[in-house]
Image 1 (cartoon, helix red, strand yellow):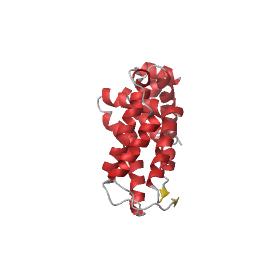
Image 2: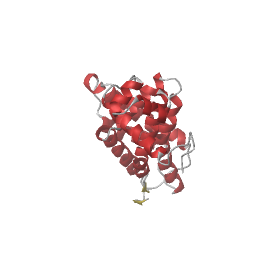
Image 3: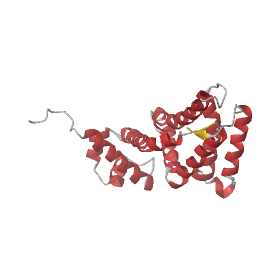
Image 4: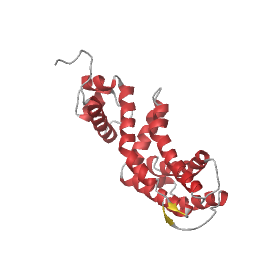
Length: 215
């Protein structure tokens, strides 16, 4: 049966995601957030016509790139929310240790910098960055705090505010040292900084018990 004019192929979503991944890898390795639609197509090894077919315009491409990263990073964020019952300190140290590895070794830092730059400089993409990159990160920390509250390891608290308090200085420190080159002009011992930051948080929100066990 002939396809209805204007109808999409059954694998449209899969093709769109695959193409967004190619653009993501190509643009991050080359022209960056200021690249034109033609440069994006070249970096992804495809045509401008194909990009327009799947994404509409340049802003649509960047939005899809952020969406593709959320799809690919989501399984890692889920694993990062596993807690150590009875030991809030261990849960937070475990989370931040994995976060640093992902940031430096698996490209998370480069992509966060790419997405933030796009969100700040491209009209309408700020909310996309918040929804696709920033909120999933904050919600993963909210989940950890909420689990500890539910298990009686922490007294009830505003978990959203707590997640912002925990993550904001760490993300700023990572941008400072890595993306902005601060390690060359103002080095910071990130592991020591994060360890001290966790202790400050736990003084503000002291754990109620110290019984160890898996989540």
